[in-house]
Image (cartoon, rainbow, N blue to C red; front, side, top):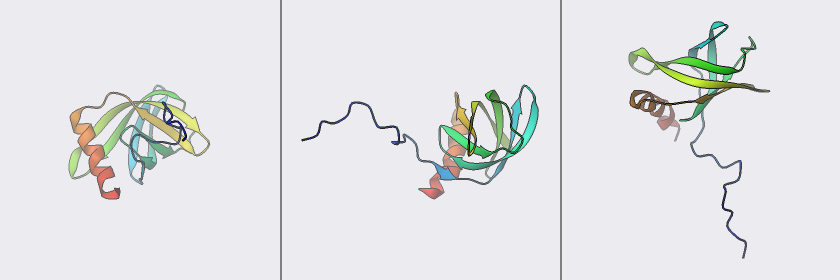
Length: 107
């Protein structure tokens, strides 16, 4: 009998990641850019980045489906070879619901 690991393995995800292709606004200390999302989860987003945006704290403005007002998310940007990863920080209820609208059709 194999023992059950106490900590989950790295490949185990707490939130599903789904494909995405919407554009969003990125604000960081060096300026503002429009980027295209590659995938999305309730905790973060991966985006294409040809501009080589710097890593660090950022603010994202994501379009809200069927709502003219975008959601604003504070995040931390980290570079990977396949793009720029944004880890979401504190999310309010409206933002959680908007993210769920993007993700739920893919589940």
